[in-house]
Image 1: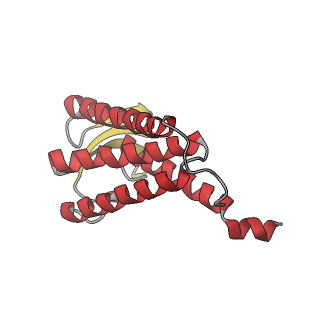
Image 2: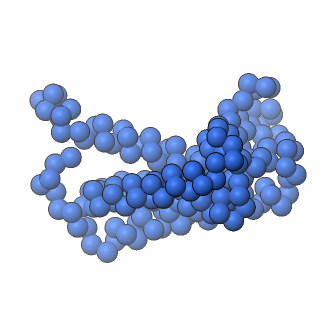
Image 3: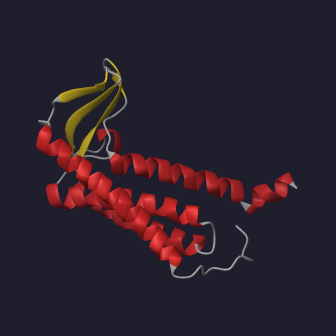
Length: 169
Protein backbone atom coordinates (compact mmCIF):
# COMPACT_ATOMS: atom_id res chain seq x y z
CA UNK A 1 0.00 0.00 0.00
CA UNK A 2 1.35 3.38 -0.87
CA UNK A 3 1.69 6.08 1.75
CA UNK A 4 0.72 8.90 -0.59
CA UNK A 5 -3.02 8.40 -0.01
CA UNK A 6 -4.80 10.54 2.54
CA UNK A 7 -5.62 8.67 5.74
CA UNK A 8 -8.84 10.50 6.49
CA UNK A 9 -12.09 10.12 4.65
CA UNK A 10 -14.40 12.08 6.89
CA UNK A 11 -17.20 10.99 9.15
CA UNK A 12 -18.69 8.63 6.57
CA UNK A 13 -15.96 6.02 7.07
CA UNK A 14 -16.85 4.96 10.63
CA UNK A 15 -20.51 4.99 9.58
CA UNK A 16 -19.81 2.56 6.71
CA UNK A 17 -17.93 0.26 9.07
CA UNK A 18 -20.63 0.47 11.75
CA UNK A 19 -23.54 -0.11 9.35
CA UNK A 20 -21.89 -3.16 7.79
CA UNK A 21 -21.04 -4.58 11.23
CA UNK A 22 -24.52 -3.89 12.59
CA UNK A 23 -26.18 -5.47 9.55
CA UNK A 24 -24.18 -8.69 9.92
CA UNK A 25 -24.64 -8.72 13.69
CA UNK A 26 -28.43 -8.38 13.40
CA UNK A 27 -28.66 -11.04 10.66
CA UNK A 28 -26.45 -13.38 12.68
CA UNK A 29 -28.23 -13.00 16.01
CA UNK A 30 -31.72 -13.06 14.47
CA UNK A 31 -31.00 -16.21 12.44
CA UNK A 32 -29.50 -17.96 15.48
CA UNK A 33 -32.50 -16.99 17.61
CA UNK A 34 -34.93 -18.29 14.96
CA UNK A 35 -33.08 -21.61 14.73
CA UNK A 36 -32.82 -21.98 18.52
CA UNK A 37 -36.53 -21.32 18.96
CA UNK A 38 -37.79 -23.55 16.15
CA UNK A 39 -35.33 -26.44 15.71
CA UNK A 40 -34.25 -28.81 18.48
CA UNK A 41 -30.50 -29.25 19.01
CA UNK A 42 -29.34 -32.03 16.69
CA UNK A 43 -32.46 -31.85 14.50
CA UNK A 44 -32.04 -31.49 10.73
CA UNK A 45 -34.44 -29.73 8.39
CA UNK A 46 -33.94 -30.15 4.65
CA UNK A 47 -33.84 -26.87 2.71
CA UNK A 48 -32.53 -27.99 -0.70
CA UNK A 49 -32.85 -31.76 -0.59
CA UNK A 50 -30.01 -33.18 1.43
CA UNK A 51 -27.55 -30.69 -0.09
CA UNK A 52 -28.48 -27.77 2.23
CA UNK A 53 -29.93 -28.48 5.64
CA UNK A 54 -30.61 -26.50 8.77
CA UNK A 55 -28.94 -28.49 11.53
CA UNK A 56 -29.05 -26.94 14.98
CA UNK A 57 -25.70 -27.43 16.71
CA UNK A 58 -24.07 -25.92 19.78
CA UNK A 59 -20.39 -25.45 19.01
CA UNK A 60 -18.19 -25.07 22.08
CA UNK A 61 -15.06 -25.10 19.93
CA UNK A 62 -13.63 -23.17 17.02
CA UNK A 63 -14.28 -23.45 13.32
CA UNK A 64 -14.92 -27.03 12.27
CA UNK A 65 -15.67 -27.82 15.96
CA UNK A 66 -11.95 -27.93 16.79
CA UNK A 67 -10.64 -27.25 20.32
CA UNK A 68 -13.88 -28.00 22.14
CA UNK A 69 -14.28 -26.23 25.48
CA UNK A 70 -11.58 -23.59 24.96
CA UNK A 71 -13.83 -20.61 25.77
CA UNK A 72 -11.11 -18.52 27.47
CA UNK A 73 -8.73 -19.18 24.58
CA UNK A 74 -11.39 -18.10 22.07
CA UNK A 75 -12.14 -14.96 24.04
CA UNK A 76 -8.42 -14.07 23.92
CA UNK A 77 -8.32 -14.77 20.17
CA UNK A 78 -11.39 -12.55 19.74
CA UNK A 79 -9.70 -9.68 21.58
CA UNK A 80 -6.69 -10.12 19.28
CA UNK A 81 -9.01 -10.15 16.24
CA UNK A 82 -10.69 -6.94 17.41
CA UNK A 83 -7.24 -5.35 17.70
CA UNK A 84 -6.46 -6.43 14.13
CA UNK A 85 -9.74 -4.92 12.94
CA UNK A 86 -8.78 -1.59 14.56
CA UNK A 87 -5.35 -1.80 12.90
CA UNK A 88 -6.84 -2.49 9.46
CA UNK A 89 -9.46 0.22 9.92
CA UNK A 90 -6.71 2.77 10.55
CA UNK A 91 -4.71 1.39 7.62
CA UNK A 92 -7.66 1.40 5.19
CA UNK A 93 -8.91 4.91 6.02
CA UNK A 94 -8.96 7.01 2.88
CA UNK A 95 -9.26 3.93 0.67
CA UNK A 96 -12.37 2.50 -0.96
CA UNK A 97 -15.59 2.56 1.08
CA UNK A 98 -16.08 -1.05 -0.01
CA UNK A 99 -12.97 -2.03 1.87
CA UNK A 100 -14.35 -0.47 5.04
CA UNK A 101 -17.64 -2.30 4.47
CA UNK A 102 -15.73 -5.59 4.20
CA UNK A 103 -13.97 -4.75 7.45
CA UNK A 104 -17.40 -4.08 8.98
CA UNK A 105 -18.55 -7.52 7.81
CA UNK A 106 -15.56 -9.06 9.64
CA UNK A 107 -16.35 -7.00 12.74
CA UNK A 108 -20.02 -8.04 12.68
CA UNK A 109 -19.08 -11.71 12.40
CA UNK A 110 -16.54 -11.43 15.19
CA UNK A 111 -19.06 -9.74 17.49
CA UNK A 112 -21.82 -12.22 16.59
CA UNK A 113 -19.82 -15.23 17.72
CA UNK A 114 -18.41 -13.32 20.72
CA UNK A 115 -21.92 -12.55 21.95
CA UNK A 116 -22.82 -16.25 21.75
CA UNK A 117 -19.69 -17.34 23.62
CA UNK A 118 -20.17 -14.81 26.42
CA UNK A 119 -23.94 -15.18 26.71
CA UNK A 120 -24.36 -18.92 26.08
CA UNK A 121 -20.93 -20.52 26.44
CA UNK A 122 -21.16 -21.86 22.87
CA UNK A 123 -21.82 -20.67 19.34
CA UNK A 124 -25.05 -21.64 17.62
CA UNK A 125 -24.32 -23.19 14.21
CA UNK A 126 -27.04 -24.27 11.80
CA UNK A 127 -26.10 -24.31 8.11
CA UNK A 128 -25.03 -27.73 6.86
CA UNK A 129 -23.97 -28.23 3.24
CA UNK A 130 -23.03 -31.52 1.62
CA UNK A 131 -24.28 -34.86 0.40
CA UNK A 132 -25.13 -37.64 2.84
CA UNK A 133 -22.37 -38.00 5.41
CA UNK A 134 -19.93 -35.99 3.28
CA UNK A 135 -20.69 -32.55 4.70
CA UNK A 136 -18.93 -29.25 5.25
CA UNK A 137 -18.73 -28.40 8.98
CA UNK A 138 -21.89 -26.69 10.22
CA UNK A 139 -21.63 -22.89 10.29
CA UNK A 140 -23.64 -19.69 10.82
CA UNK A 141 -23.95 -16.16 9.38
CA UNK A 142 -21.05 -14.86 11.51
CA UNK A 143 -18.76 -17.68 10.33
CA UNK A 144 -19.63 -17.08 6.68
CA UNK A 145 -19.07 -13.33 7.12
CA UNK A 146 -15.66 -13.92 8.67
CA UNK A 147 -14.52 -16.28 5.93
CA UNK A 148 -15.73 -14.08 3.07
CA UNK A 149 -14.50 -10.85 4.69
CA UNK A 150 -11.06 -12.20 5.51
CA UNK A 151 -10.79 -13.76 2.04
CA UNK A 152 -11.57 -10.45 0.33
CA UNK A 153 -9.11 -8.62 2.61
CA UNK A 154 -6.32 -11.11 1.86
CA UNK A 155 -6.95 -10.81 -1.90
CA UNK A 156 -6.93 -7.00 -1.63
CA UNK A 157 -3.66 -7.03 0.31
CA UNK A 158 -2.07 -9.41 -2.19
CA UNK A 159 -3.15 -7.27 -5.14
CA UNK A 160 -1.98 -4.00 -3.58
CA UNK A 161 1.32 -5.24 -2.10
CA UNK A 162 4.02 -2.76 -3.19
CA UNK A 163 6.51 -5.58 -3.82
CA UNK A 164 4.07 -7.25 -6.22
CA UNK A 165 3.36 -3.92 -7.92
CA UNK A 166 7.08 -3.41 -8.57
CA UNK A 167 7.48 -6.96 -9.87
CA UNK A 168 4.73 -6.37 -12.45
CA UNK A 169 6.24 -3.10 -13.66
